[in-house]
Amino acid sequence: MSAASDWSRFPLGTRFRLVDTKEEYIIDDYGAALVGTETIDLYKLSRLEMQRWGVRHVDIDILQWGSAEESLKVLGPRAKNRTVRQMIAELQKKAPVQSSIGAEASKSGQASARKAALRTLD
Image (cartoon, rainbow, N blue to C red; front, side, top):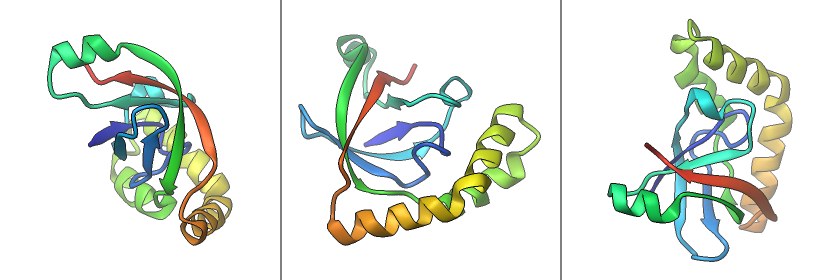
């Protein structure tokens, strides 16, 4: 299931599970309104499902960190956009740190829970 985030917070390919519902999602999109936030947009199949979900603050389990390097590859050609440049700058600052976090998470199989604001994609 698809989700969007600020890729400098949750990089492309990050897999996570909602603690309460056990639903799993993969970060495969980003949005200008998400840059600089801990917000994740969830894709829902219908407008009714989106309305039912609304905006919630929930705990998530990071199952596997995405790749800062892959995020930078995708974002590079889109760097004319101001918000994309923001994500690129943040990713470049912490790329070595993010890589080590990803390695630790994949060794343990699961990272600790994080609090995130989750909303549905419009």
